[in-house]
Length: 558
Image (cartoon, rainbow, N blue to C red; front, side, top):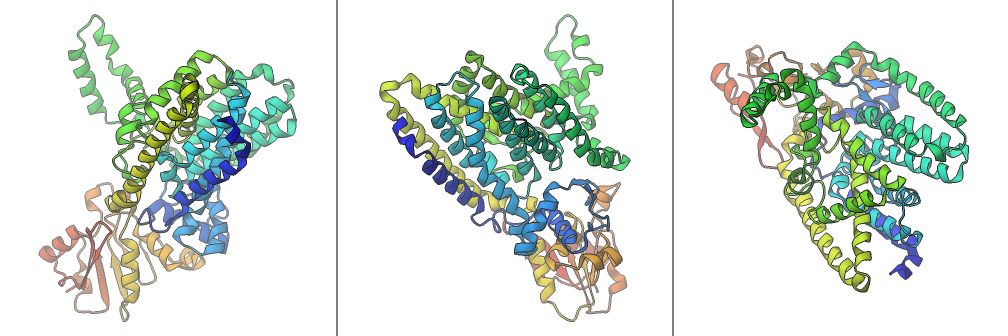
């Protein structure tokens, strides 16, 4: 078996081609539309490219205000490059995510070799396990999905994996320059996604404590502290914004429905009638229970191997974030890790357990995006499981590996069908599908002075800025979320105290009556409401998404 590994780099390149193909093919068409955060990333990168400012006119910000969610700038600044090369497009926005997802094949190989050097796996098996881990990453449904959408977390996870890989290499070489590179990458990762604010300090600290004896020159710790402090200072200053703090709390478990949690506690008191039950199931421990429940949900076999993340943007329907065949092999890998008691094994176990914490403290749960770094730990453990199983059947190694290979081929083909055929129309609504078609239609309508667009769904202004490639300097001076140029946009539920007031259902459009120079684009609900209460003409056109669902009715005010 190991004779085939003489061509290691040929195999690795072929695995890379497989991973890159499945990540880049039809990236501008599947998913069927850019969702709102992707358009915001793209337009802000476009704005930075042409004006050096974000859409609000802030000069080279660390945090981008965007939808008042204050996006981290790492992915946006990177996106400036593909926007310059390819123009403002779907490919430009998703390029870096797919690129990092593709080179992750090489990164996993290096990560695996470094981890294995601190385990009891025989050295002759290192390249085999590393190649298996790279292949698992190339076909992983978890990582493929997030590599095909402009998710900042995908790049952040790759950067921290690179940081820890170089840290492990430093431990073997004791060359300080590699430790400094590792620290720089560690800091860089926190500028991509907020989950890294929690995971990165924990995994970096855990790795240092685990390998304390291997750090011969403790002076490097001082270097790391100074570098981390200086380079993270701009982010710390930006985060002190009160509005950012309020927004951040909205997605934590602290905002969980208290009534529901109290009901759950009462049910538990009835279910577990025991001495001290009122103490154990106490309101004061409410949040602790919720945090534990959130954490466990991210370890659930149902989530991992069967149904996946409930959010349809986070994976293909009909399968988990891992394949069903991964389950027994993961158990075998975990058994190996727990019985070997080597530092490399403890690192992998700690990696997975710590990577889930950012997802546990946020809502909703389980959450495949916020726990994305855990995928690397799972896949590495599964690769060890495959090696361990093959070693148990030395006389039938090829039969065992062949059966495993057939199982993975079936799972991979099923995933491809679900992801490229079944899921796109199902996820069309959640990806904001319809705005591109609406924009194209309105652009074809000449002789109109004003277009009024519903805000019921998401933030329409950012889609039109994106597809118009609207001059950022002009928008910064004269535009707003409510409108620019010919466009007026209805209010969005995100900005309303009462979400029912979103859109144009309660807006009297009669002031535009008697003119053919105005078109309105209404959601189906708004269209029928307007016809009954205020009066608009019969629809002259209907915009459908890729699922065949009517998204917008185009009409003239009476």
